[in-house]
Length: 323
Image 1 (tube, rainbow, N blue to C red):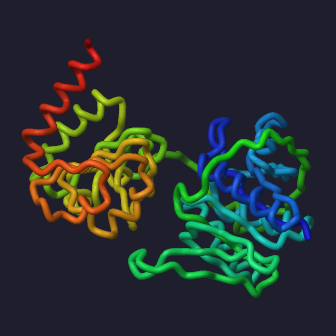
Image 2 (tube, helix red, strand yellow; image 1 turned 45 degrees about the horizontal axis):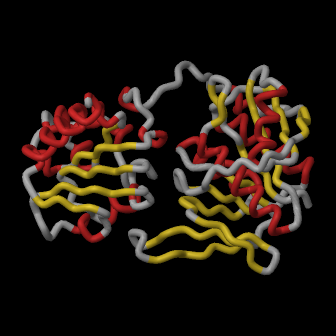
């Protein structure tokens, strides 16, 4: 057995950071299992340099497949072929909608066990055990695999990116795509509802909730985020109300983030939101309700009117940068 196969999504000459995290995690687990971590890259004209980059994150071999990238069915065909060629026991995916779609499709194709929203993977008795939160993240479920191949799909940002300094061999793999796999074509790639900032990559996030009172409340948050050099995020409640873009939504039904600073303005801190931002390095909360749940897990809490505090904070940041 060749161990673990990781799907590495790339776009415009760079790998998705969740894919790099998955490769790093795959390499760690493969070392504990005494086997290898391989990666697979699908695309048109993928260069040797791009594919070999995955060696820096722990992949010992990279399967390169010529075909359409960014569509689920061709990737499922390619991964099925790679697993048949390499005898992999596990297929590992970073978080994201495409990873969920490919992982689920691959599990159906191989009649394999699958676990989604995985936040941790451990080795037990020479096998991998996936852990995922359940019951609104109040409990952890441990998932063991009985199938020949186990499919593991992580939650966004669950796996840390680590450079090992290794090298990878690049092996071209010829894949005969199924007719239905080539029916769809990629027309355009973009964020849903048109957001132009990827909040998952931001080191500083200023997030707004229902406590802003109205849609225009985000104007002040955008100004503060601009002064701090960060981005703006939102809760599900305000996104559902049409106050802000879905692509900025954080929480159980949105994105998971881990910035260095997370400033929450008018956010109560419900468990559904907490699961998406609790890994932030520093959490600062502004809320007029001193009993708001978010204060229980914040590093710094400010009880007061955010409509007065946020503008003052913005002025202070601008003054500091100007001095």
